[in-house]
Length: 398
Image (cartoon, rainbow, N blue to C red; front, side, top):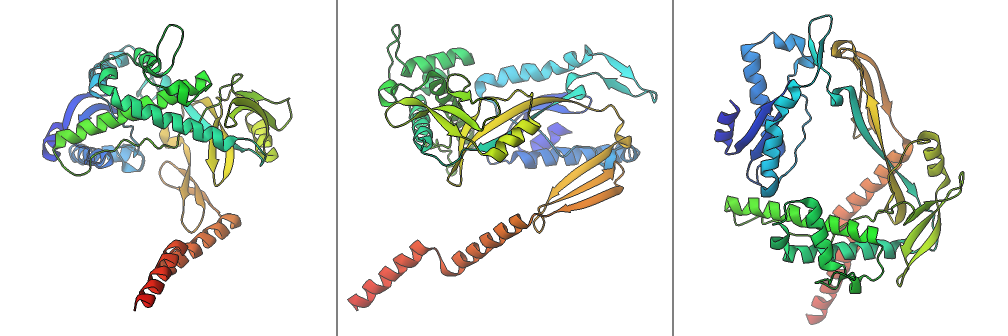
């Protein structure tokens, strides 16, 4: 049936494997074809045909729905297509080797690791208090480096794409721009960005390689369609955020203090600076992240303020309670209210509901609404100024 849908909507299913609770697919489709639409088409048609053949299934499913609304999609290049196909084809054999047990109802449960545990990633931005530190210069020099490397690797991509192994490709790309005693660089990256820390340089190289690889994949897909419009563009100006690796670029202050040490670029050299962090943010981390392993922080800018973004990865053990006996908490982000939090059973019975509404958010949205209405009615100040000059010159001419 899926092959019939593929022929009807003009996409190809290159590989497919049906698993107990999901389906692996490798699909070749036009860039103009939205992946979300394709997923809806396949899920909707499969569910309709399944319910026609087995109408009793609706009673066994939560809410009468066959599919979970979520899905995972990722693009692959020509080089990695064979690897992905082999991975999909090997999933069934891997599933057979996993142990299983039967519950009191006779249902078979596979003891898969991803069923027993779920990995969650949470992040929190700690605001850097206003002080005289070169945060802006550091972010600018890093983004300039990423943009310069993106242009270079776009020029030599035909050479780099012939290297299938990711590590060897990265090393080759680094040798092109970084000079050592045993290596002569082909490009003047070290002259343009002198004394850049090696960790930041490698991070910029990785970011640039990813951007060029993604662009080349999208460009190849666009050429296959034969459409003249909608050609993908390689964006060299980016919003990359530098990562401060521990010990070499980031050091924590004394225990219990709201300070840290960052290696920043002051316009001439990379130096260590002591930065003071917002007390309320640090208290939140001490209270909620105590004992947890956090990743290296990334420097980000939001509304003229700078933050250190920390991430934490945890493994959560999932409950073995049957779905019909579980109690669900759902959060719906609203327009008139910030959110609605609902506690319900699996059959849809609502046990409780709470509207979350913060007055400060209301005031902020009201102010933004007034600004939008004013700009819509009167135009921006720049437009008004240009119109005024035009009318004045026209009047003088007359």
